[in-house]
Image (cartoon, rainbow, N blue to C red; front, side, top):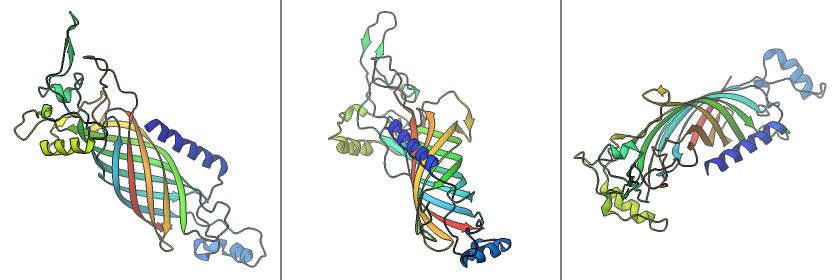
Length: 319
C-alpha cells in the first residue's frame, strides 16, 4: 500500500513539474500586489498600452493546521489520532513556492490477529512472553506459551523544506481563483518515539490467551475485547533501530509528498485541506518489523512504514 501511494504521488508531481510554468496565484488585476516602481507598467497594461503586466510581489504565507496522523505499517492504525503543524511559505513565481514546515503528531494502533512468532521482538520477550522457538541444536520446535496482539503508540515529529506547485489557473483565465489545487514534495529530518502496551497496571503481562485471534470479519469484536483488557500505559519501549538519536527518539532523513486544496476566504486568508505522506525509510514506526514466518526464526516484513497526516489549516498571506 505504501509503495502504491508513494508511486502515485511521485507520478503526479512529475507530471505537474513537466507541464507547469512558474506561478503565484494570478493577481494581475489588483494594483496593491505591485511595488510602486512597477505601477507605470501596470497602468499601461490596464489601458491596453503594454502587452504584459509587471511581475507582482512574491508573497509570504504563514499557516497553522490541526489534523489526524496515522502510521501505515504492519499494525492497523487507530483513527483518528491528533497532530499539528506550522509553516512559512514564500512564493517564487506564479505557480511555485518554497515552504518550511514543522509538524508533530501521535498515532496509535492495534492488531486484531494474534501473533506467536515474536521471538525477535524485545518489547515482548523482555516482559516474559514466550514465543515460538526452535532448538538450535536439535531443531525441535516449541509452540508459543503466550500469544500477543501487537499494539503501539508513536509520537512523530518532522521538519521539512518543500516545493509547492499551484496547479490552479495556470492559464490565467480569471483574475483570482477561489480554490487552489496544489501538490508538494520535499525533504527533511524526522524523529519518532514508539512504545508498546505490554504490561498491566501491576506490571504483569496480559493474558492475551483469553482472547481468540480475530479475522477481518470479526476484527471489531476482537478489538473491543482487547480495549477492555488493556490499560493506556504504553510503558514498554518498542524495538529500536540502531541509528541516530534525535530529541529523545529515533532520527531519520525523510522525504515528503502530498497534495491539498486551498479555499480563499478573503484577500489575505485561506483554509486548506491537505494530505501529506512522510517517508522515513524505516520499518519500526509501529514497533514491529517481523513477520509470522518462519517458525521460531521470523523474517523481516516486506515494506517500510510511512507517516500520513491529513489536516485542515488556516493560512495568512502577507507581503
